[in-house]
Length: 295
Image 1 (cartoon, helix red, strand yellow):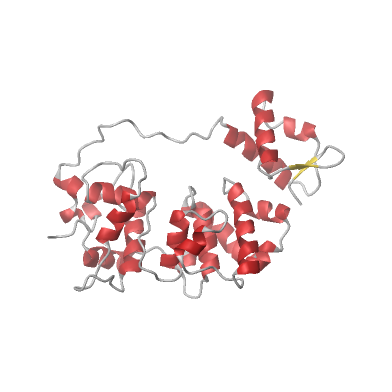
Image 2 (image 1 turned 120 degrees about the horizontal axis):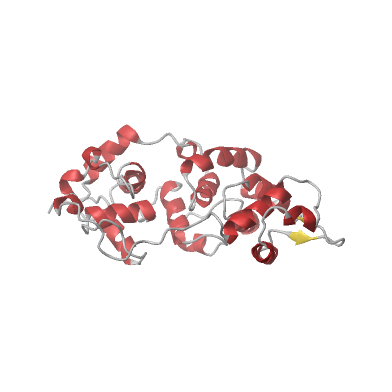
């Protein structure tokens, strides 16, 4: 039976259009690939390019990051969003330096034992850094599978079956073993979702697997279930947290509460956002009741 995602066709397309991303360059270490994967979580590629390059130049190894002051790490994280990722990455770096010879483990289970490392990140590092044939599933892959395999406009909620679906598509030898191209196939599947099989305006005319896509064969039916929830930013506590952190990142000395109060007019929401930053360890109060990034 013809695969809904023919490996040769997809890989040939990927050979032609693969983006020249710095973390795909020869000589990039597993640690530097791990940093890219953490930064790319819920963050567009374009916003990660500059910070990633600066980050690995400054902290090319886990031990280098582990030795850095927390305030420097948060300033370098800048406006990437979800700054707790930076704290978890620094914790992860400390364990890699202390317990793993300053290197990133090459197996998924060990990776999952590290702080801030979830199933996707562990599999992505195993696949993209070490060339292991493990299924890697992100939002883009789930969308391609929903359309090409299941004939649905959008994927449902994440489930363990997503891994089984991705694994079933991986190229194999006649004996059933993974083909040597399996890791590159995983990257190609992700690229297809990022560049062609996009959420809002899929470019089906230029899709390399359009001839075998179940969704196209069904007439590209619209989604008939509940509308997917859109993450809002404007006016949320996330926005207020970001504004408060901006003040602290821009000042090398602690600031008064009055400096923070001017960033947002709603005192209740502002206080709630500040309290959450304190709880998360992203802000600290000095002995003289000033506010600063953690030292």
